[in-house]
Image (tube, rainbow, N blue to C red; front, side, top):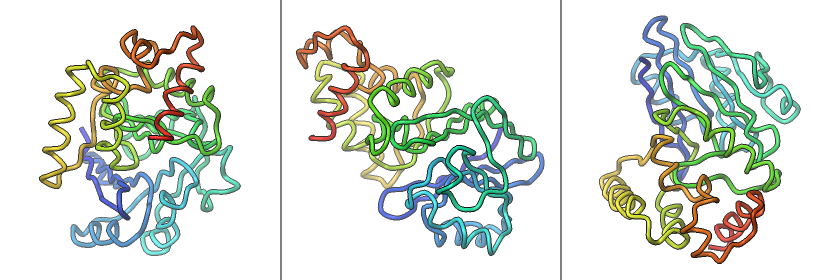
Length: 254
């Protein structure tokens, strides 16, 4: 198993360092800024062998060029979004696995938040690095994609093993749960999760990761067909994309 280190960045971003214990390679997921990542690497006398980018937004890429200059890692990102990513050494696409050290990453197209967004799954280590697509207790705002795009992404990620851990790009859990309680107020597992999340945050502990199983039980963006939610929101359409869009619009205005 890998050790996955959570690196808080900016005001609410997370970067992740995956330590491959078999080959001593260190792999970074996203680089919101360079300073906390550099500090962690240098304090622990670590190299940086690869940076895997989920999407082009500055709060996921601003540290890439500094870290590339200092540590000479390979930079990896989506082939179909390379025109607006930092210069890539490896271009990846869905359906073609990425091998770094002893680790094999499965690549998923996860449009919605942006077009060209990808997620990286380490199935052996039960870890999904989802960026701003599927988020703990939420999903990313639709800046470029459509409700159909994000609905398709949610459907795709719901098929992963229920014990896979979700490592998303931001600490948004508190606001996401507050919203979820307005659309799914009778969900006892959601209420319990709220208590747990608030306790973690009060002690400065990240609420990330969670399991896909937990998300399926409590994340409204994976539960657009839940009868209690549909009844509570007075949603009668049989179209899953329209139901998802309604919930997303409510979150945007929350």
